[in-house]
Each structure stands twice: as C-alpha cells, then as structure tokens.
Image (cartoon, rainbow, N blue to C red; front, side):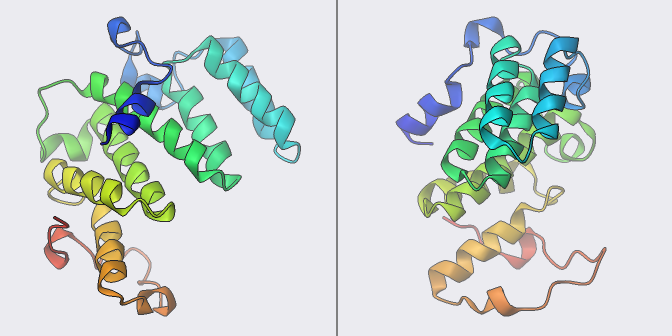
Length: 199
C-alpha cells in the first residue's frame, strides 16, 4: 500500500481501540449490532431508490458503530452498487485495517483461509481492494494486494487467482477474456497454479 492508501485504510479507525470490541466472527454476520444501528442500515436498504437519503442513514449508522463490520459492509455495498468505486475502495481499506486487527498474528494460510471467519473476511476485503484497484486503473496497488492474497491464501479459497489472471491478461494486451464464455456453474477452473506471480 502507498502512504495515502495506508492513511485511507486507517481513516475513521482508532488503532488504540484494538478494533471492534466484541465477537468479531459474530459481528461479520451482523451480530452484536446495536438495535438503532441495525434499523438505520435496514432503512437505508429500503430507500435504495433514494440514494441521498439511504447514504445519509448509512453514514449515520457508521458514526454510531464505526468499527463494526456490518456498517462497513453496508457502506461498501452502497458505494459498489452505486458505481462509486473510489469511495467503495476507501471503505474496503478501512475494513482491511479493522479485520487485520481481528486476525492477529497467529495466522495459518491453509486452515484459516478455509474456516476462520475473521481471516476469511480479511481475505475477501483484500480481494475487494484488488478488484477495485483494477477497476480504477491502479494496477500497482492491485498487484500488491494480489501478491499478498496469493501468500495468505495459497489454496485460492476466496478466488483471488481469477483477478490475477485478469491483470496478467490486461498487461499482456490480451483482452479477449471479456468475450469468453463463463465457466460452468460450480466448476472452479482457476487457481494460483494457472497464474504466475504478478511481481
């Protein structure tokens, strides 16, 4: 991450607080959310056709529970589906910082990528960060995130290798993949073995 990206990742996040103060695994699934915050997020979802009002409600929810994953997920979805990708990436960076604290230092790339909720949330945040950087044309940042994802998820449990393949094809000038047929349902034709390290 660049210095600016690092600053973005910690925006609105207090490292001294140790992150979300509660059961992070449960929180990723929406647990431990104060009732008033839950209602704000639900109302924001109902007002999808009124984006200004929906956005204000989600911002209010995050102000009340800034470190809770559910408020970050709600804002991420709002920005993503509104095609506000730069703001979406900012939220992904905050979620990365929050989940990094939850994962801690005892990370097992094989076991945790499969079954540790906090670790999987972190990996999906990293994948989202890579995807958004690809969409925004920030290929160096995308490459850095994908290299880290490859290191932390060597069995490709969250499917990051597909993004690495997209990046490699783009950089080689081969954009024919855009018209290629989608892989068969439930078939996973990708994996890190089909891609080369991006560095």
